[in-house]
Length: 193
Image (cartoon, rainbow, N blue to C red; front, side, top):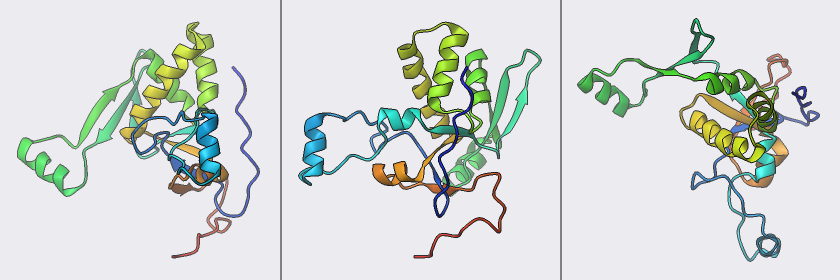
C-alpha cells in the first residue's frame, strides 16, 4: 500500500472543506463530456454541483470523532449511531420507545475501510489497498467503495476533506475543517457575512 498523500500547502484560511461526494441528486458527478465543458465555458449551460470522479477519488475520508466505537473479540468494529436530535426524532423516540443509539456492526471489509478513513488516506489509496488485500478488480472495488463511503457519509459516520480550491471550483458549500496540528490562535476566522 502506498503511503499517505501529502496535503497541499496551506493558503489563507482553512484549506479543506468537509463535504459529501454527492451532488444534489445524490449521484457522483460524471459529466466530463467535451460538449458540456464547452457549453459551460461559454456560459450557455450551468455546471452541475458535485465533484468529478478524479476529485472524489482524491478526497480524504475522515471518521466522525463524536461516534462511540468498539472492537469485538474477532477484530470487527461496531459503531453506535445516536438517535435523531430534532423534534421529529424526539416525538418518534417518545412514541415508539426508540433507544438513544443504534448499533451498526461492520464486517471484515467494512472494518478494513473504516480503519483507513483516518484523514491520511485518500479514497484512491483505500481502493488500491482493498484491491491488493482482497485481490479484486480495481473497477469493482471503486464502485463498491464509493457506494459504501456514500452510505457512511449519509449516516454521518464520515465526512470528506477536499482542498478549498476544489470545493470552490465544484460549487460545493461545506464546513471548514480545522486541521489537528493547528492551535486555536493560528486558526483564522472567516469574515462574518
